[in-house]
Image 1 (cartoon, helix red, strand yellow):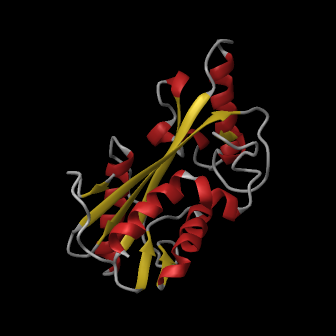
Image 2: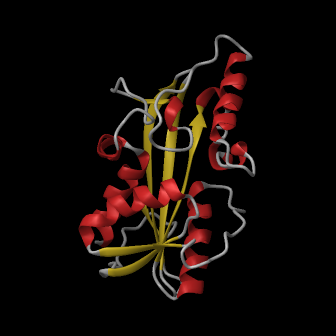
Amino acid sequence: MSGEGNGRQAIRKLAPGRLVIASHNAGKVREIAELLGPYGIEPVSAGELDLPEPEETGTTFVANAELKALQAADLSGLPALADDSGLCVDALGGDPGIFSARWAGESKDFGHAMRLVEDRLTEEPDLARTAHFVCALALAWPDGHVEWFEGRVDGTLVWPPRGGNGFGYDAMFLPVGTDATFGEMDPAAKHAVSHRADAFRQLVAAVL
């Protein structure tokens, strides 16, 4: 899915050069930089530019990605790319969803967040363990133009968590068709199947 919230195809191309990655999450910045590497883009993180983190007041992944990208583009004077992503657990009504980072608390303790998910699932023994990751990417320019793209990957949740790679909820998420969690995969394997890679394929086809 792509467009400016209305489903139309992207029409503005992204020129080679500096691009702000509107995130203070080091793992997310690293993944995005790796995905952008082949396209002549010079990623610089919001943290490197001392840009503030906006309050995520949107009610969807796309809305939160857009507000982060628009603020970073406005403050930096450069195109900016923001990612809003999260884990949606079917039996929990889609939670933690857009609140995935908040479940980790101010200390960003995703071990704690994964335990919260597991505790909720084990409250009732028959709850399904199916889940999906969503990634919304918003690309904004300083004049306020925005393009957005949304990717998804389906899977199941395992316990205990497996693997020390990745970040967030990766160690408990087993993508459909694999026998390794995102936490067990090397970056190249994850990039081949992840929600973020799905959104990036759409972005690349549209604007690069």
